[in-house]
Image (cartoon, rainbow over all chains, first blue to last red):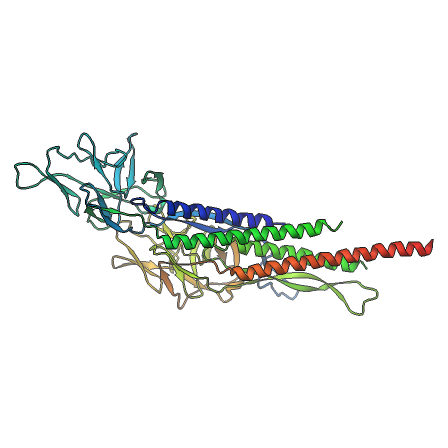
Length: 261
Length: 245
């Protein structure tokens, strides 16, 4: 009786669905978080009677054969790179990307990671770093005596120094873009790594064609829509229940058979 | 007298198969572009059961056929630029290992080379049978109702949308894909491509649940019939044994 394993595959799929939804809801207030979505596909079909096979000696064919499916599988968990809402914070080193692109971050092991969470800070050496203290590439050092830091839409960082009237350019932010952003590997801590599926990073200046603009003193909130998530949760829960109903039905049918003596 | 047992047995086997179909529908309630299957029963006319006393032929249940509900599933708005749904009866064309395959699950993505691909990485084909290559930094994509894909005002190509004379007879090959079988695809006249939408599964939970109950009860009643048939035989043996003795 295949129905047991088919229904089990359905329950497993809904379980994955609930896990993805709960992760989205848990990250509702995570800066730069992109919601995920579980994708499902039907599994192989067993052909009991193949479509188009001859049904009589007169040459008539079976118009629709008998193909029995074997259940469902999770094919992908996509990340939806939709723009999140921008929130004003008033913090000098908070940067939101309005449009495509990722900040390049250097991890302690020397490799690069990418993030859209632009809630940066300055470390003891004056470098602009993430909340975990990783340097934002290309390293920009803010002079300690600077009165004010202004970052414009194109990513130019200007510092107003004491005794000077014109602000000085001290650095330039860069953004990285990918062909397939859904193919990035999530590292946690709002960070992503480049993979063979995402393609190599293309570096550009904010505001260029294909890159977003920067907004200082704003952060990008997560793009999770709670209403959508809760209704998806309800549907996943009901679908789980229905699959378990199939299991109990096939169990009762088997019981009826085994009670035959 | 054995006939009742064997007729019941064919019914039980058919019901189990029907349960498999319902279970598969239920399991795919969240699968994009999934189409509901239903198993149809027929009486087996070719091989009638032999009966000595019955006034008419006794027939087995056999020779199943499949009915596939090809109606559109519910459209769900996702906002993703590579999510496309078809409001027409057509199918998207996908490059399979042995020629094109067809799907209604329009949850596409980009490959590292910039080609539009399915969730499994199979290339989505244009109406000319070629892959659609997108410039990764060329700005957002626009997909119009006729399936034309354009980026920053430049047309890249048109999604290949095919129609079939008898879509229910397409062969399901898994991974949300259909094989054309003996049918030849025709280009869709009105594909009705909708960007930012995805077609959900057209499985109707209420229908499947009622079908499940029907199957379960029918199975129980056949089981009961087999049991009473057995009791009848038991009685016959004991009674006939007594008259002889």
